[in-house]
Amino acid sequence: MALCNTFDMRSTLQHIGSHGLGDMVKWFRSNFKLTSVPESPPLLINAGKSFQRTFLGASGVRVSVPILGAMGIGSSKWQSWVLDEEKGVELLKKAFDLGINTIDSANIYSNGESERIIESPCLLRRRDYVNQTGLSRAGIFNAVNASLERLDTPYIDILMIHRYDPQTPAEETMRALHDLVQSGKVRYLGASSMHTWQFAHLNHVAEKNGWTKFVVMEDEHSLLYREEEREVFGYCKYHDIGIIPYSPLSTGSLARPLGTDSLRSTLVKGTPFEVKLSEADKVIIARVEETATKKGWKRSQVALVWSQTKTVSPIVGVTQEDRLIESILGKDFVLTEEEIFIRFVF
Ligand SMILES: NC(=O)c1ccc[n+]([C@@H]2O[C@H](COP(=O)([O-])OP(=O)(O)OC[C@H]3O[C@@H](n4cnc5c(N)ncnc54)[C@H](OP(=O)(O)O)[C@@H]3O)[C@@H](O)[C@H]2O)c1
Image 1 (cartoon, protein in one colour):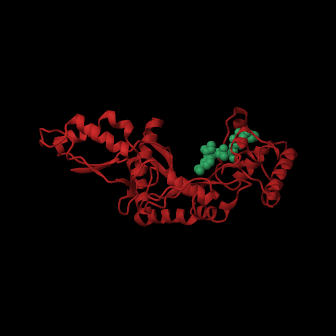
Image 2 (cartoon, rainbow, N blue to C red; image 1 turned 135 degrees about the vertical axis):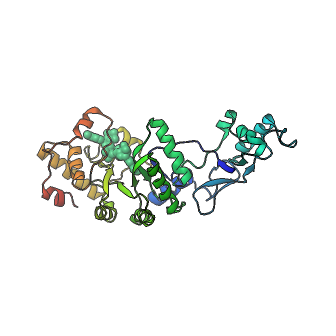
Image 3 (cartoon, rainbow, N blue to C red; image 1 turned 120 degrees about the vertical axis):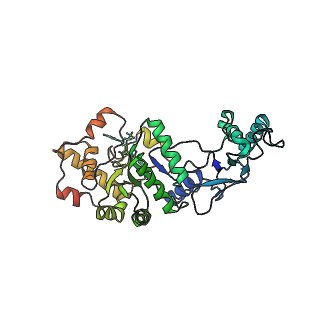
């Protein structure tokens, strides 16, 4: 048996996705038109090192260039030219320091001694990890196993992929997700924020192959951001996919008086996460305030009740107990048809 191992630290959570540095930069660029973030060359994943990473064939798994062959590391009792542990570890340390993180090994090399040395604990911190993100089979399995370990649970109820990964074939992603469901580690699948065609494509690939499809879409949606109503919501409603919106208060803009700031809004000023209000947004915020006053509600409650008329269950971003309690809305919280369809359209 031969094996090629790209040494991967396990990270990320139940939202798993394509947020490697390069991907993140591309995502920022395409979404926020950033000009100040330096772009990394396409295959140079680790910008500090002078070598490349490349995808292996038509897969999403990344390997270093070059790959280090480990036949020469193990035991001189097996072959007299082979490095014993001390020198083998030194060579591996150097390889990891240089950024070579893919090792070609085999169980027959030094009758297993080679593998034991590669796994030496003293090498752990030197490894450079590349297949932690993205939606390759390697990335997905690494991320899910790490989340299960951190959460100390045998399964995840709903695993959501965090954006689309253009560098991994859809078949690889959907097969890996299906296998996780089959294994019992994951029970249902969802996705978060992507173009409708991407979401539809992934679901189509799953359907064509008899694999598990998505049951949930997590998208940004609020009175100030309704773009997703154009396409994704229609697709989801047609296919009976539940929509759970994030940032239903537009990160707080809908819940505080116009022109006021909070710690969070101050901290994100000048970053891509700053909410820049248009004139139309300001009118909507004023109407939320009027409605709240008229009904004796909090502003946040107006925005959340409106959100619930269009989606299954908003994801609230509260960090205070009183706000948490305010976000639980009973049957008395009802907006009229006029309020839902006319008052909040500008
Ligand atoms: N899938 C994704 O890509 C994605 C992206 C973003 C978020 N999310 C998820 O969605 C969750 C919510 O996101 P979000 O924090 O942007 O949601 P949000 O509900 O739109 O904004 C939360 C902010 O609103 C303000 N707020 C909340 N309740 C309030 C109240 N009763 N009165 C006044 N202000 C209130 C607070 O702002 P201040 O603290 O400034 O006062 C709070 O930080 C996140 O925790 C995360 O789980 C997912």
